[in-house]
Length: 163
Image 1 (cartoon, one colour):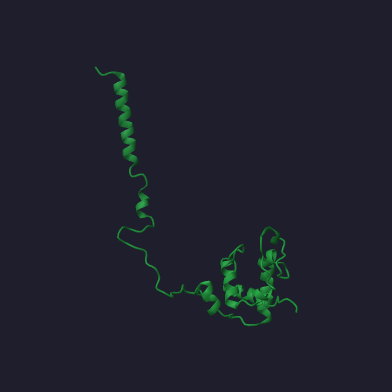
Image 2 (cartoon, one colour):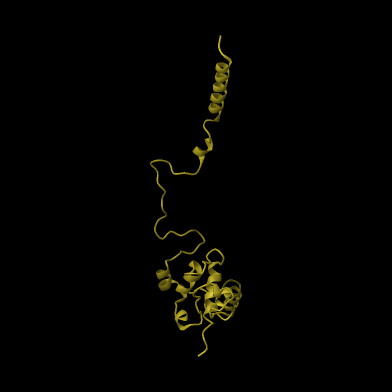
């Protein structure tokens, strides 16, 4: 006659085996997830391809040479840029753009936007700095639309230091 421990062990083996068999495969949905199958590769978009309805993103050097302000000089663009500057930029650069905003004391260097060096930047370079950020400056590509970034550039141009 079989011992009770042998029967208990056999019953335990059957229960564990059944539980394991019903659990396989553990996650059948992994097969249907987004992935790259073997022998396939991700295709890159063709050179100079544009997303529909979006401007082409240029490297900073290319933006410096190629981008021009589409808004032109208008009181409406300067007014919109002033409002956006007060919202996004003045906390670091200060209301007058001289780099003395309430957050500036926490950073080593905040640019004086009225300086001749900054005012000598091309519109495209200034736009790309606003879009991509700088050393301590955050990028505003997600916060400001292209038109709003150009409006801020237009307003920064009015911050020239008095002679």
